[in-house]
Image (cartoon, rainbow, N blue to C red; front, side, top):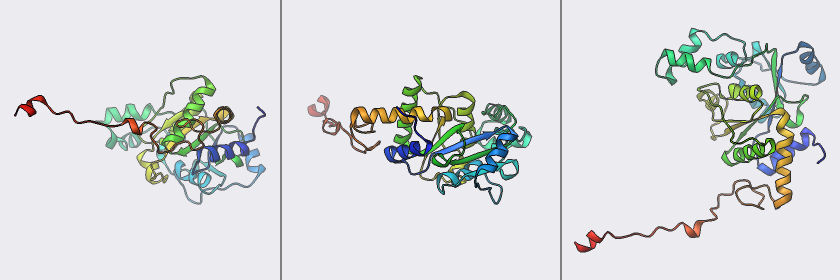
Length: 266
């Protein structure tokens, strides 16, 4: 199959999976020359006020913007710890007490979150179609069946099974994507309390993180399935919609009441 452009990949993903949000291309900048080249290549946006990382992603997934976030534009202590821009201090640990049994558990849980191991300069997010870089991670906000299709196609494309999700208390969007970057494996994770409200996931969206080098493999796998069956759906082979709310076994799901012999004797 001819290599697809990021624009073509986004079109396929949006059309075949019926995505509501643009797939987010994430780039972590560790090299100053690479960051300078990014700034010189085209227009991008900076948050007018310090935001959480999941809020910065709103610009990419809802408004189609390319947003650059440096340390001074990030207003979330959880994300700062995940990105290595802040040490895990007593205040950070204490801030997690509401999730756990005691302070000792809070410290263990916070220190077990995924973190970037290199010195991060900035992070950029953009719609996949508009990315000016090869993404390190592609982040999807999607529903249950869209997430299922992405996960299954990634497992088939990479020949990895089962998928091993990594979910933390707090730090969903920031740590969930860093996990995919650090391991080179896909990740599925729920919204944290912060990304649910601040990151605007009140529709119950599920997060899927695909390692950037794998996104083309996932799209190729989706297209190969479609060519083989005539449709992108895994739940209803040959059909185009990825999650039709139709039960193929409905005529079989019938329950018959059985009377107790003791009840008849009475």
